[in-house]
Image (cartoon, rainbow, N blue to C red; front, side, top):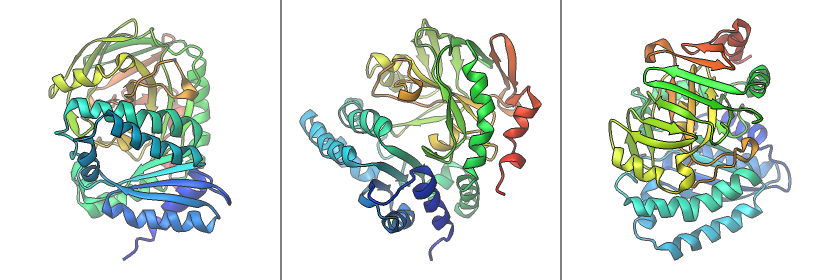
Length: 376
């Protein structure tokens, strides 16, 4: 039985996020069998608008067959194929609903490095991100429900409520925070195991309200590359290339990560940070604002939007908030500052702007409440 809510979600992806129109070319990637239903709806609506789609099915169980055995020449050849298609595309929609997010967990580190550097970086980081209208999302399958520690039915209800939000209203609510961030020079973040200082002077602040991610709800910028000093302890688990990391702690000196540890998989953490020189510098600082997302679930697209959180991202910077850092890595790791996660403070130019996940400016906090951002 078709879920009517997919019609609403597809309309957001096609009509709002990528603004497809007659004559456009769409690159549609569908990951996971259960995601096919939404993929079909996106394909139908895009075609009805007069766009032409290239679509393909992908998931980690297929990807591992290639990544585990390919050499440099094969990675480059695959990248050339997809790069040609991406260059022709006006828009990209990625629907990700893999059956097993840990399917790449046992891949050799050298092979994953080749995949990131020789395929993902040229196709997605250098072409798709700066040159197409794009949006990526997860599909609410049973694997996601398990990571969220809930039933699939309950998770689907949560998912569609969050993903089908009024993003136009959310975008308007972000304007005041953008202005505040763009006036700021020095940022200080404190909390359990965290005391971090850096500058965002002269860096643009960018609204994320349904144009690039579904679900959405963050404002991001980037630290001045060499300005980061201190220690940051992330308090949510993070999943990277099929491996889970808990209690990641990074120490910075003049922008560079000089020490890294984790409660699990510290050796793999170090290898990821050694992917290239830019992997040990930070490309993004972002504030999570979605009031409907409260708890981590090992899914970056959800976790980085958690109300009362921020993420601080080793690796590549985005072109629209560019501090010059370049890397094959862009690893969004999240710290929640609400009291139940240990609390914390955010200071802009010596002024406390958020305490325990709540903005000290009551009007600003009200704009990001569930009541303000709920559906009309």
